[in-house]
Length: 112
Image 1 (cartoon, helix red, strand yellow):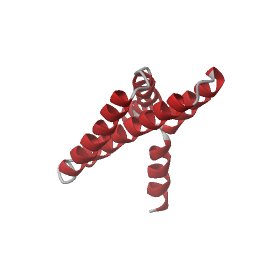
Image 2 (tube, helix red, strand yellow):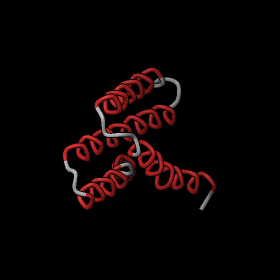
Image 3 (cartoon, rainbow, N blue to C red):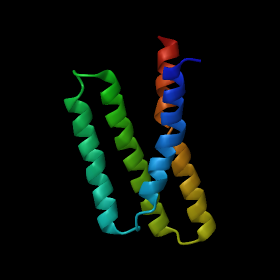
């Protein structure tokens, strides 16, 4: 296993869920949800701007937008459901969802 694979694994399965966990610590208020929505839009525009420059930067920007979107959706659900077990389940599902785009990318790369 080379260094690139190890760093990619750490980024996907450690940094992504950790960043989502930090974003989920925001208060479940409209201001936080709006800020996360603006981060999704900013990451999407950054990915469009970086499209011709670097594929890795483009994928990273899209992934950051995905993480912010997942955190926003999870915060909105936590705002709706107050039960602690339900909120714990929402948090666990959000942390697992941060890695989903990479499984799709890996599948697409193996099929081509």
